[in-house]
Image 1 (cartoon, rainbow, N blue to C red):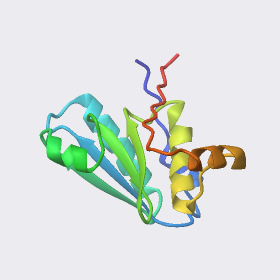
Image 2 (cartoon, rainbow, N blue to C red):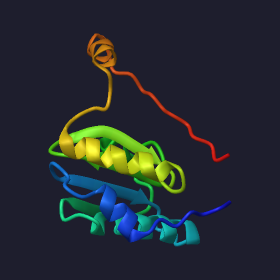
Image 3 (tube, rainbow, N blue to C red):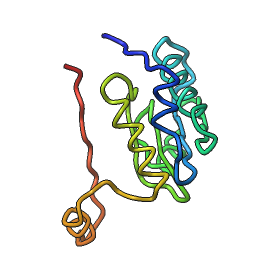
Length: 140
């Protein structure tokens, strides 16, 4: 697996002038591995890029009650919150080509704006019950 290492300057440039605060909650197991170290280092770099980003690390054993309360289905998981919990959960490392999208997602959470067209927002508001949606990305 290739690992694209983003420069802190590139991340800081993308995260300048955030409109509001963002909390990045990182849920991971208590088992140390190169993957968890790399993911945590990336999240620390992201959090260090702006004083408006706070990183909370929850490195514990799987706790079904806690995970249900925060609406995560597996670890590692990243939950993004602004003033309120957005319901956005990211599974896996936001690295490589996904990093740009993840950073823009942080900007959208900070600005309290979904990056959706008005028609899409209207369709979502018309939903009568909650919907679970997962977007899967595969490295190519």
